[in-house]
Amino acid sequence: MPVKIAIAQIQLQEGQRVILDGVGWQEFEDILEDLGEHRHSHVAYYKGVLEFRMPLPQHERNKMLISHLLVVLLNELDLDWESLGSTTFKNRKMQAGLEPDDCFYIQNYRAVIGMKRIDLEVDPVPDLAIEVDLTSQTQMSAYEALGIAEIWRIRNGKLEINLFQNGKYVSSEISLVFPSIPIIEGISLFLERSDNLPMSALCREFRAWLKQ
Image 1 (cartoon, one colour):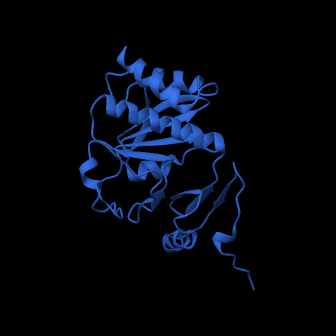
Image 2 (cartoon, one colour):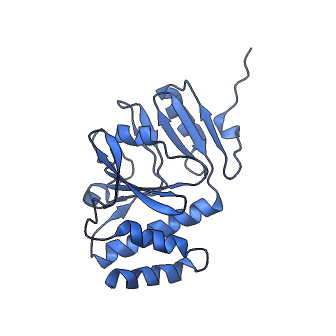
Image 3 (cartoon, helix red, strand yellow):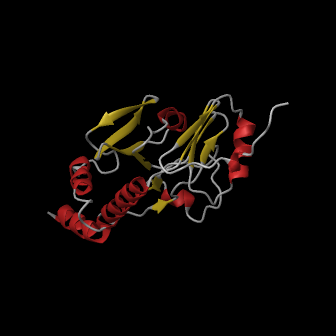
């Protein structure tokens, strides 16, 4: 008789990931309920393949830095926004679910103010997601199924912008949200400097860079 182990019993170490195949949608839903909301691991699901990943401290610092720099940028441009962090976004029809490292509603910020739960059958997906690829690659198939317009990916210490076009993600030198600002140059510059400066100083200097 096979032994069943609760998913919550699986203990991942920092930087580790686990991939499970043949996971049905209801099983995925049950696993999310079993895991609960108070956890550090992130999940991604696409058509039966479920991935768990436990981020490293460096991953979390890079994520927070990019998020803070993005907030500086939004505020300097006087744009309204909402962030839902690593909310679980899932769509049964598309058989896809994911938890971004961070995400922002900018054009659609009004739609999620005060939102308690997200239902992608009626609610919009985020306008921009942030992913830090340090020990694993972003689950792009799940992103393509959900159709988030723009992803900022940190890979090898640099920023890459991926835009959703015709059902696929394509690399872009220009941000859809900030077309007139050299985002890749700016974010990558401050990522390079992040080993030597606190986030507070980096944010102040980024604000000054934007005003130049």
